[in-house]
Image (tube, rainbow, N blue to C red):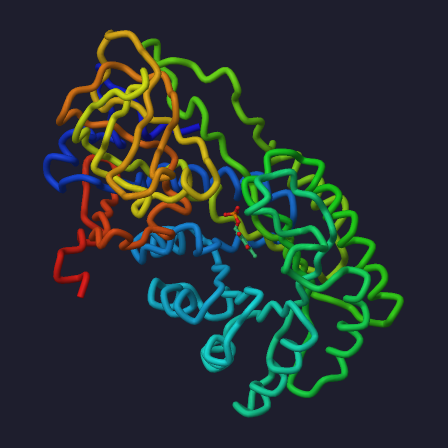
Length: 423
Ligand SMILES: Cc1ncc(COP(=O)(O)O)c(C=O)c1O
């Protein structure tokens, strides 16, 4: 639930600032983030997981790696989950302590591994036997010891969109749980490798408890199996994936209600599931959510360019495109779209589409929307995660600016790209 992004007297506000003022001042399309909403969501996670003594929350940078957002999340007490030298670089530059950073990723390059080793990163999460060998070799070449976790693939269906499902054995991620014991046995004998943990991540936008329970059961079984082999581990990282509610993010008498609302995870129950199954003496537990921390904080403000009708369909062409926000084009993802100024004008179905030369360049298809005119502003909600971080310059479109809002202050945290930036 977003409470920092709301209507006041029918005008959409981000914290204490009218969204229309932000669009006027900084132009559109414009990503706007509420610092207060990030703090709220992080606080909810912290509170729920406080039942697990010493539990760590590592923020998954891939969701949103704007350096100012990273600084904010670091100041709240998070560690960092990264997947590239670039993300490690950003995390370090934003204040995360090296020991609080982990490096995951199914295809780390030698550069990624060397960067992690030379910067003293907390954990390198290894996803295959061959990678384990390379990490050992690189550590040896650099005269270091690599602190390693093994990413196991628990063969659990996360029941999310297939493109963001990662925990099935046919997915490319992790080491098959049936084979991972042998990998662990090999790792403990390897030079320059210190095996410290187990990692698992079953998918993103998970909205049910059962997949997390199944994964935790598998991890528990695996840890007990390792104990039988005489291998004690000190860390269990259960990954990220906690889903958020995209439908009815804002409710208002003048907005239509989406009947098909997503279920959401109860954080307290999730923390209990993990605590009950995965508490072992001397072993620390970590989670690495991205979306849950940032998704609800972000809105994409965009202006209506044109209206048109074809074959009885109403099209609203806006100045944001799929290059700015890919989630609908990639996953047919639902994002609530609301007018920045609410009017009692009634609703009718419309497709909200961008200017990019692809039919998939749409943000909503046959969605109930009010009458909108050229120049009107609309807000695409819940875009703080996997919004800007997946944006591209497709169609040679400069990327939008990003603005960070706290109470009544707004500052640009990434400039709008210019045409020169395209060269
Ligand atoms: C290994 C790993 N950890 C954490 C995450 C973060 O997931 P989410 O943003 O759904 O919490 C991902 C996302 O794909 C991931 O692959």
